[in-house]
Image (cartoon, rainbow, N blue to C red; front, top):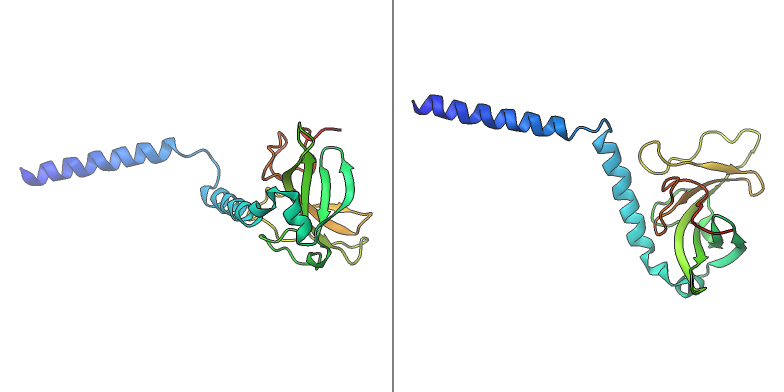
Length: 167
């Protein structure tokens, strides 16, 4: 009798686990999604100190672009533009004026030089998965990747432009 009762409990738990696992399957690869989300959190933690533009300037970043519509001001640290993707050390920090005119830290940008624009090869290995959107900037001979870590982007976290950053 005890054996049948134990078997019944095991079967009920197995069925409940099966139903739960099916209801949580959204068709995405959860390991892949989890990896890039963890990487974004690591990036946020590593760059949190730059919420004040003065901290970035104190470390040598400077405004190399002025205001660019749908992006903001590009604060660059030239020694970081060395041909490697380092998750926690983006080459560029993006700031945009908020409603009060103060500079708000909105995103980071990675910049990896391209030696031969006629044969740029594949984009750099960036975040885990295939969601990041590397673009070639022919004027600077660079692969570039934006990551909107502090300003939501309706087109996605890795989209190159953000319509919420004014003209």
